[in-house]
Length: 85
Image (cartoon, rainbow, N blue to C red; front, side, top):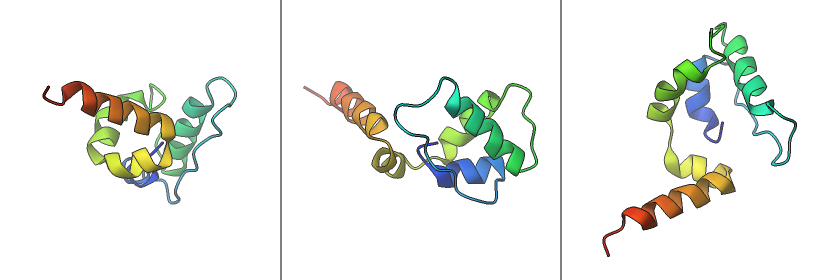
């Protein structure tokens, strides 16, 4: 959900999803993902997890990092880990 453009592309949802608040109720992200698919007329049998590869393939890492500070931290840590010593 950190890249709403990629999510919209894969789900077929007509609008861009807003990120849930940082501290949110349990399973809110899962519910929002199912809602986005429903808006696009799709009922994924596994709740949307089966579309993870497609969403990640469509995702813009830069845009997602700008929208989600936790994701940005993850990406920076991962880059530092793989950076040659």
